[in-house]
Every structure is written in C-alpha cells, then in structure tokens.
Length: 517
Image (cartoon, rainbow, N blue to C red; front, side, top):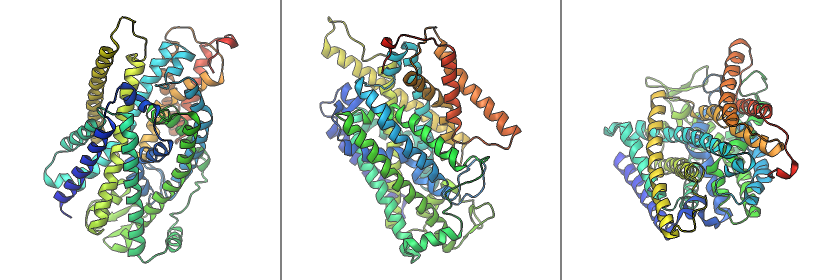
C-alpha cells in the first residue's frame, strides 16, 4: 500500500480529532481542562478509558508476547499475561470501593490534595512529583512503541528522521488538547477506543477467514502449540501466576487509583455512584478485550507460519528467513504493513495504531499539566478578594498553556531517550518502571488511609519516599543475583511496603478527631 495514502489517512484522522476539540473546547476554562466541569457521561468515560488503558502496549506488544516461550527481558509467554489482567480486574474493584468514594467525599480536583490534607504540603507535592515522573515515563514508553512502528515500517523509507516523526505526532496531540483538556479527551478517547476495537475485530476476522478456521478450531491449534497456557506454576519465575495476579492488583491500585490521569476522568463524572459504574463496567470490558488481543496474538503467529517465509525457533520467536528478526513488538506491524494483509486490513490496522497512540499521549499530557498547575503551582488556592476574577482566570490559563507546552517538550525528550535504549519488551519495561515509581505513592496513600498516625518532622516523608525505591532496587539486585527467585510485577508491593514501614517509623500517634477519612 502507498505510504502517501497511509499518511493521508493519518492526517484525516487528526483533522477529525481537531474538529472534536474545537467543538468541545468552546467556552472552556481551567475547570473544563482539569475536570471537565464534572459533567462527563459515565458511559463515555468507561468506554474511553479502555483506549487509555490499552494504548499501543496492548495493541502491539501484548499480541507479541504470545509466541515468547522463555524468560528474559521479555518474560511473558503464551497467555500468561492474562493473569496480570485478572489482577488488574481485582484492583479496579478496590479502586471503586475505597478510593473513588474518598476522592468524591473530599471534592478533589487533584487526588494528591488528599495527601496535603492528611499529612502536609510536603506530602502533597511529593505525591504529585512522583505521579508526574511515573506518568511521564510510562506514557512516553507507550508513545515510543507506536512512533517507532510508524517510523520503521512507513516513514523511514521516505527519508523522514525519527525525531521529526515524534515531534509532529506530539504537536498534533498538543493542538487538540491545548484548550479543552479533559472535556475534549473524554470524547476523543471514546472515538479512538472505537477505532482500536474495530481494528482488533477486523484483524481477527480476516485471519480466521483467510485460514478457514472457526474460533474453536483456532483455539485448538493454539492449544496444540502451548500458546493458550495461562498459568506459570514455577514460583521462582517472574511470571508465576500468583505473584502476577497480586502484582497486577497493586499495579491497578497504583497506576489507576493513585494516578491523576485515570482518576481525572473518573472524577469528571457528576457523582460517585456513576463513577463506580464507570469503573466496574470498564473492568469487565477490559477482561474481554485483553483476551481478544491475546487470541489475536496467537492467530498472528499461526498466520505467519502458514504464510511462509517464517519459522519458529526453539525459543519461540518467529523469524523472517533471509531477513531481520520479526518478533514480539514487531510481529503485528510487519504482517500488517509489509504486504501480508490486504489493503483494507492495512488501513484498519493503521487507524487502530493511531487510535492506540493518541490516548497514550493526550490524557497523560493533560494530567501532568493539571497536576503541576494544581499541586505544585497551587491553582486552587484562594485568591485575595481584591483580585479581579476574570483577569486571574486569564493569567492562570496562560500559565497552564505554558506548562502544557513545556511538558510536550519533555515528552519529546523522553521518547528520544527510549529510542536510544531501543527496548523490545515495552509491556514489561513499563511494569518494571512502575514498580519503582508508583511504589512510594502506593505506600504513602496506604499509610494515610489505613493508619491514623501523624508525621510532623520536616522532610521525613521526602527521605522515606526517596530511600524506598533505592532499597527496592538493592534488594531486587541481590535476590536476582544470588538466589533462584526472580522479582516480577510484585516489585511494586515490596516498594510500597518499604515506604509504609518507613513512614510508620518516622510517625507518631495522633488524636482520632484529627483524622482525615
């Protein structure tokens, strides 16, 4: 298929997003940008969150895990990833039952305001900074994955440098989120999720038809090749099913319930009852969608082997004979963009890929901007009575736009860093990084909610939250080096526990009346 035609499709898609942004950002203000004026439809939020949670990682990387049958930098194999999804599912119910009621009861714009009210200003700002670092790294890792696919399979042959591809795509995201913020992305994420699921269904349908298989027959063939194996029963493995479920549960609590991007959309719903409906509906839908992506991954490996020019080596990778390796993150794009699929499926794949890219960036960019403005710059602080309210709103809007632009530049720099690293297992890399960056948030919130103890010493929270990831890294290094046990996604539990215990050590009892629920 012509590269020019694909670029036209991408441009048309972007124009559609701009149209939505123009419509939704009319008469917008800072409240619209941060929490959508608390008027978002819960069903739209639930559906749009699927796209945000899946992103390019699920669209590209999760199908690629199915054929990887040995451990290493890219540990998941067969359907083992689904145990992580089961952990996510359990975590969403905890978020809906514990955290959402807390955020609504306190009428929060930024969820890290809770830390300020429960502890002090230091905790408030530390929570926000950890989120900004975590979301910045996680979002740009997801962005890099999709940008790199477009670069390798489309733009490189046209002589376009990688940095230009990354810059242009980030500029697109900046343009349609600049005014409307959350009010815009609730709608655009719904649109993008629709296209992503359409692409998933179309690709599954095409491969089944092409190979003349029913879904039952396809599952049988996958089972014969051990691709449908869900449980890893080796307790020393990174993907042992019990620690994968447990790790997935805590990752959801941290990366959804303690993440301003995900909660920003939830608290934009008008009441906590509808917000809970959103979260629970979303959790059930995600079970089905992730299973479909794993099924697609198995079909891609079957299709690649049947097409010829590919074979499976003992480690489980699919290789292109006489050409470069095609494995993991590269498999789906290679089949879609190198003439193995018909033109219409290629178009649908590209639309799905772009739909996976934008939710990774728009919500993250809006959320880190919101957190920085509200938590670090104190946008929600009371202004003196003498200040002109209209002029103050304009001043804050100007600052917010400057922050938004600055974070766009930071995202670009981080994408270039990932390009230099060139990691092939983005799905696991994101989870591993989350173990270090979200762990202190997990420990800090858990300590605040579970205990009634007070922390009065200045900088003690900062010391604990900085020391905990370092201790986690050291423990992980020695355990992995000198024992057979390998830490996986449960690393976040260790980090959160160290943070919790450290906070307990530097705290003291306080009166029950002073507690913040």
